[in-house]
Amino acid sequence: MKLTEIVEVLGKIKGVIAVAVADYQTGMILASQSNDPSFDLEVAVAGSVGVMRAKEKLMELVLDDDMIHDIQVNFGNEYELMCPCPCDGCEHSDMFFYLWADRSLANLSIIRRSLFHARTLVGEN
Image (tube, rainbow, N blue to C red):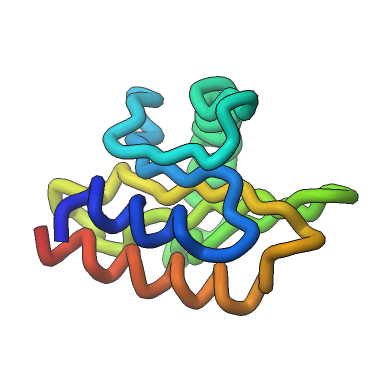
């Protein structure tokens, strides 16, 4: 599947406000979909790039033999999830999925499982 197709499928999950695949070294969004025109996905992803970089640096300093599986932030009304692609050393190793969802509509378990599945599809491109 192409990145745009993966993002499109994730964007159809109930409660998803926006989803993107981005490069956390450059901050460039590679594919995205927003179901809310007022949601500024560029700003949201840019902020998450900083989080990904900080966590990556922390992992290098503290847990040299481990990797980030996912990062979840729970707000009062929303969920924010960041999920790096797991292929170490491949061309997609700096990519991560970013997803923002409405907490009152979204099923967190379904969103997480869908993200984990989606990132396995990236290596198939």
